[in-house]
Image 1 (cartoon, rainbow, N blue to C red):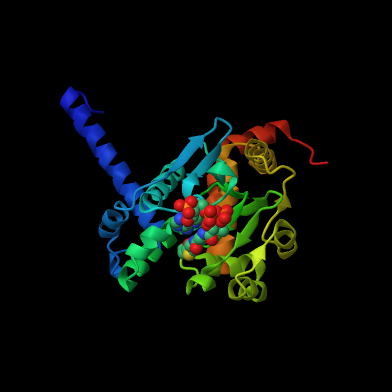
Image 2: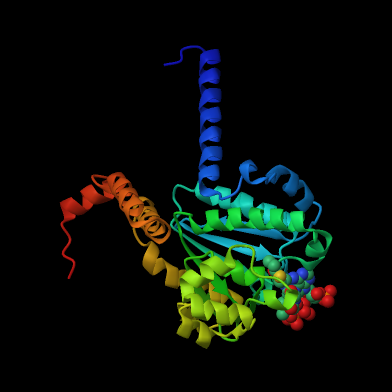
Length: 307
Ligand SMILES: CCC(=O)SCCNC(=O)CCNC(=O)[C@H](O)C(C)(C)COP(=O)(O)OP(=O)(O)OC[C@H]1O[C@@H](n2cnc3c(N)ncnc32)[C@H](O)[C@@H]1OP(=O)(O)O
């Protein structure tokens, strides 16, 4: 135990350093690309910071549901450079949210997101910048997908290009009447680069993904439901009411202690991403974190009947 004020300060400082080191290591583990891939994140961030506008806002509710708003309505919530950097910061904040259970992502001004800001894309159109931006967004969206929170993209208006890709980094998609998801990349002479193709194949299967990407097809709520791209069509397209509906929908899966909900998401992530033996070992490790935990012990006392 530290006894003097100096010793206490040194101990606090060491703890802080350790926590920061662990955080950085955790981020590296969750990310795909680093210096070994010829990727210099700090350099790219400096470039992205030149393309200013909009914001990514996070509100953490007491019930453990986070609301992440894509906020650049003048450009249909297109991602400027600063918004890409802010999204990474918000994901880091969510990774460290001990009480978090769920997340809803939606766009301001009754539309979801029109992809990357074409002004930034034009200025960063050389191949190396494009690859770096792709690695940056893949890192961020992979970390978003792996958050131990049950995530929902609330699609109102249009989810276009990178906006469509972002919806696939969520566990579920809910659409409002009249909304659409559209992978327009082909019409821009591109393919998805934010991980949207890899994730879309896993959500709707290879054949349907090929049709959606090669046809740059508009996917309305009915078709999205049929493809399994959307879970439900909400009844209202009004921003406030749709958000309430999405919260009610999500709350059926986030009831219970955060430690248990987070463990559920972690075993599913392992099952989704790892070869079966590694997934089983991870499941065993996560099981060990809840077995004999407070929620488990309380349930043993209550002995609920699951009728
Ligand atoms: C990852 C790679 C990618 O994301 S590639 C895909 C990039 N995104 C696009 O190409 C989308 C281009 N935008 C559109 O097709 C339309 O604006 C969509 C999204 C369909 C909306 O149409 P509509 O409802 O009629 O609105 P609008 O065109 O009048 O747009 C309002 C203002 O917003 C702007 N805007 C829209 N999207 C972007 C974008 N991605 N980057 C920059 N600006 C964008 C429009 O230019 C328009 O601005 P202004 O009012 O003309 O000054």
